[in-house]
View (cartoon, rainbow, N blue to C red):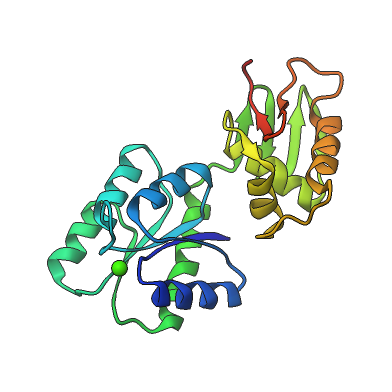
Length: 224
Ligand code: CA
């Protein structure tokens, strides 16, 4: 489960990140509202933990913008003020849950877990790009009536590319999202996996869906 933490207070952000990572979550952190909107557009998160008080657009306005553009990622709002009106405002803006500060970290972790379950219920289980489909439950891909079994890593790579359809995915962002590395291992890891994926989904089929953007990365798209 991948979680975005949006909090400008570095200590709190790092405290939350460490606690979630210790529980097996993959965690990205943003320090302001603008970055949060960009991150949520670039990456499919399973949940967002967001403080209301942020530089740039505040948590409530980030949340409204997410919902306006159809992003249904479950959001847990944090607020220094446990005021009832703020809680109501947050829920009206489309928050799934609300936790006043100061909070007990175990409670935050439990609530994030609950968000993840909700995300699983809301999400369509089948992703589609042109005639390629990926079932996120059985983890099998199908194209032109042929089904492919994918290794765990191939699955994560294809899911990431399909959820980012039409967007160029840089090698480093692939390494981060698919391998959870925050450093470049300096190998041709990504190329090797892209090649394997191509052999499965694109070989002897038209149109080609998986394209190389020279020097930058890869893009999966159904239209030229
Ligand atoms: Ca804050």
